[in-house]
Amino acid sequence: METSITFKKNRINLLNIPVDILKQEDLENAVRSMFSDNMVHQIVLLSLHDFMKARRNPKLKGCLQKATLVLPISAGIVRGARFLEREPPIRYMPFDFVIKLLCVLEKYNKSVYLLGSKKEHLQIAENNLRTSFPGLKIIGRFAGYYQRYKDKDIILAIKKASPTLLLAGNGIYGKDLWIFENRNQFNPGIFLWCGGCFEIFAGKKNKTSRVLWEKGLDFLPEFIKKPWRIYRLFIYFYYVLQLIISRIRGL
Image 1 (cartoon, helix red, strand yellow):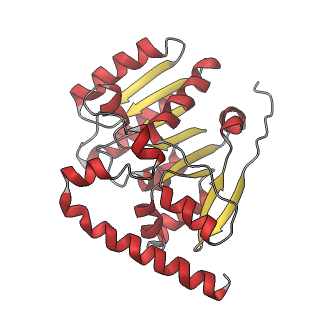
Image 2 (tube, helix red, strand yellow):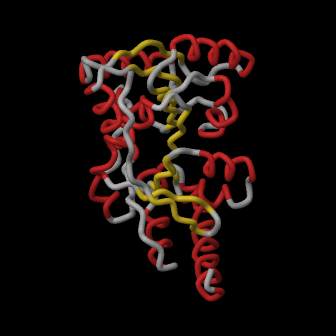
Image 3 (spheres, rainbow, N blue to C red):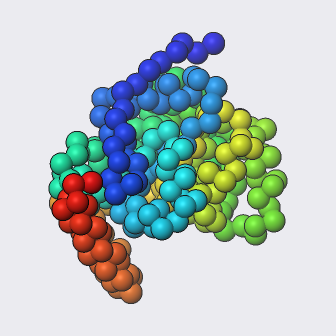
């Protein structure tokens, strides 16, 4: 039987969207608490794009409100909190967060189920994970980009496997919302969607440059590859406008 563990987090409200403040040193206790209390826990790594999307999407907003942890991965969210004179949250680099999460699970001999990515990439990712985390039990995998009618069988397979962590990646329709909408069908555990994680584990995608990430410019490489995403600049400008309005109103 797992010992009861508590961890410290502070949830702030930023433009009516919840964001959690979790210090790096509290992460291990947070993970231990989640895998020991016999409940379903969703972790959301929140980008500014999804932050703004949640303001007009009630289902996504509900997902964030009910998630155990909502951790920002965009510098703009941290800057927004400072601008509104809130306690600034700790920003996490997505892939680094996954590594730290897996390290904690390996330390306590826990298990993971892998869901997402292309079949050939997922196989390589699994092999590399087994090498990097020999004490971590990989108890199942299923590739992404599948036909939607397979959802029921996939959910049943995950439920039977009952992993400590379901790690989901690209190729999952709905991303975080897929987990949220199916949460009542899963056994207790931790559930996380992190796009691109399996491709990085498989060596098919480069990790984000730490220099760019620390400067808040980690979007540049992706923008250069996909220049049509310039529309996201308008989302950022709208975000800044909403921050200014909120500060003027004292909200």
